[in-house]
Length: 115
Image (cartoon, rainbow, N blue to C red; front, side):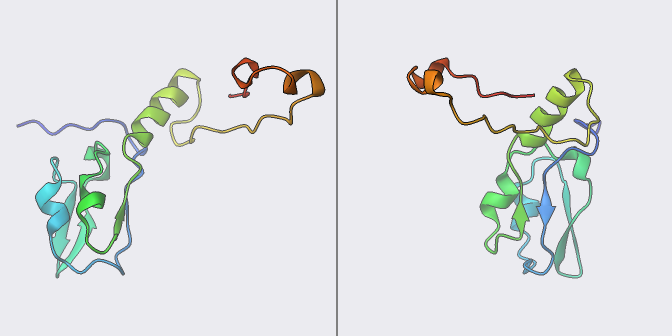
């Protein structure tokens, strides 16, 4: 079977090796063999193969793995369309406090200001 890479260098998967107890649960639930085991500890073998499903983080008993399910892929696609570097994360611009006129309008009529 051919190995797939979704997008390069955008996955939010992180492993805190100090928390890993080597149970191997992450290897059992990962559908793309992103993780490996070495001397009783998990390691990230192929970060770019991660599809950010979140199965590893949800099943890790020590919370050694974290991933924002679906975020890296979506952010990379958005940034690519906007002509940004693929390593950029999607920015969040806080809206300015509403003016007197805006505060009299329903919330759905106010713009939130996004990139």
